[in-house]
Structure formats: C-alpha cells, structure tokens
Image (tube, rainbow, N blue to C red; front, side):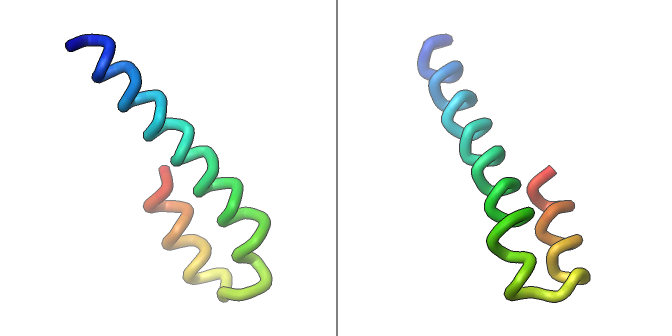
Length: 44
C-alpha cells in the first residue's frame, strides 16, 4: 500500500515540475502576465 502512494506521489510531483516548466517557457508568448501569475500560483 505504501508503495502505491509513493508511486502516485512521484508521478504527481513530476507532473507539477513539467507544468511549471511549460508555463515558464511555452506560455509566455501566448498569455498576459496576469494569467501567467494565476497559473504559477496554482502550480505551486
């Protein structure tokens, strides 16, 4: 049971890193600073 939670936590942690990286690089050109701030707050 503990192993399942560890795997799920690792996957979710990796996804949060990917989402933060995507926001800081790819979304800068498409959205205003206001929406980027909202996304980054949600990603934290």
